[in-house]
Length: 265
Image (cartoon, rainbow, N blue to C red; front, side, top):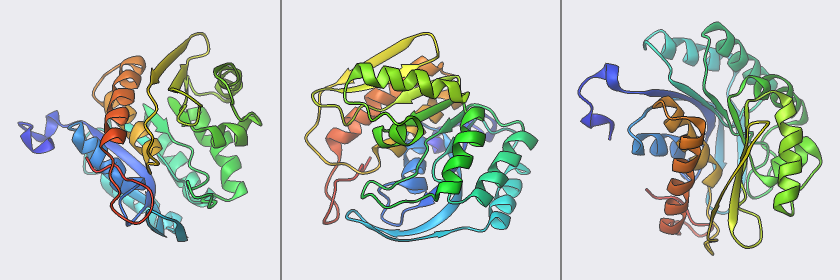
């Protein structure tokens, strides 16, 4: 845990953008728990406030771009270095533009983009204009983009039903500009096969399917990746560690509310 470090300079830091889920099953609360679990300190900026629980999303309120800008500048003026960046829910084009300017101004690198467009209950969390901004402006600057099948379909028109179709989609996704594309295979029939592609080589990692419906696995995976990159691991090393971590947490997940299970650490 972070408190075990000897001094502040040794602590790796990840700046996280995403929605606030008050139930803790996804978004920046879960991101923070995952990062702390890896001994990485999270600086979090809430792009949207949501009213949701383990069963559904009731309401979403996007935070104003002015507040987002103030949060970013206030955080960065206080620390020496951001070791990685994790972007989840943008919320709006206005918020996306503020984040984009910060990436350029502060020369932020090792960006992990989890392109949150829909909630797992089907609620749209990002309007069409924001979706287009995400694809055209944020994804090209990202180091790795982590897609679920729905997000793959939105961007490429392909909903992968097989590993070959996932590879076909990855070839299209890499053209958007990120050095790495990661397609999460939690919805494959049979084993869960996650696919990493760098434009030349595919790396497949499989694990036995766990018969649980668990919230927040995408948030956990992308945050675990960001932790690895912040700590100096390679993309492949970060991928392998994140895969093992999420598999373990899914097995431990518990039903806290009345709906889907949650990662409880």
